[in-house]
Image (spheres, rainbow over the protein chains, first blue to last red):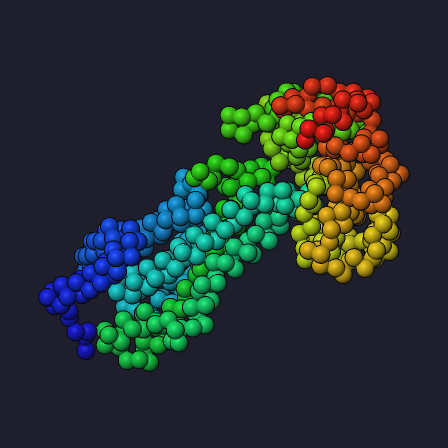
Length: 262
Length: 226
């Protein structure tokens, strides 16, 4: 059983729905009508492109293309993480790439290659969407963690120096800030885990049920992906923060100013 | 003990301190003074590697401060500011924080030593169980000093260390720093602190203007401008 297709005429009706928020924003003079229209246009173009490349990937289903695509997703996530956390991509690219790749592949290997075991193991139908979900969540968590960590050390330079003067190594001095940053990055995911099925609707599960899976199968996938995502974001935030110490601090363990965009 | 040889530190294109040259002998007590923003605190923190000089060299003993000996420099020097960082919620945890680091692990001082130092600084031992957020600025400063003493620091970089203290506490701190020979490089505007120091370095716009052996009456006027 497959999901019922939505006709193009029905899509026009769905697009017409957007006039409701547009009119509300216009009458409330929120000044964001142009922004909304651009966002909807971008979403349409991005998803259309996604539909095309997923269609290509699923048909082609080549091991190199599939893994190359995963690496490309990680690279884009990497650039987004640095840009949104106010750090210079040129300085942080390699360490963030390493942290994201290790953590993403760690859970992909366990979730897809060991738990699901598709045939072939690189099957794009499993590898691409599941990797995308894992990498997307890692991207958001790393943005929070790196932004909090470096903003906090920059703001509390004297405190950080005090730890060094008490004999702390760079890693020991950074530890209180690492703890806080990882906690902040995990908090939204913990809240989601705790309320899944009560408040938030499990996206993967909904998609699978619409696609014809039984609720039991859909629930197993949902549990699997939630654990995989939570594991990946925990590993990736800690790993990225630790790896970034090497490039973000000078030989005297003092924060370099040129890692920041501004 | 500590020597600056034509040291310049800059942020971007702006020089914070320029061509600073002076030396401090072992057990000497020196004061840096001058208007706010003149670069006094930068001189202090440059010693412990918070800034890498754009030119010139900072010497610690006979050796230039560098990436290999910076750890040792930091283990020998204590830097205490007006609002000291205690780094823990409970006072006892703040005092013992350095002993959680690998460099001092297993060397936590016995209670008797802690109590003796607290007593010398006119602090009641019950303060150990207090939450740090309930301590006054003066108490925080004395806890930071107590922690440095527990670490057996030999050199103190003190930035306005007596400014937040009441008369009694100040007397205790002055007594402590004069009864034991420590090398002290300080920033101060406190006439009582001047009395225990032997050299006075005036800094203006990041440069040393003069070095004198006795407190200059004009110093008090300069301090008044701050």
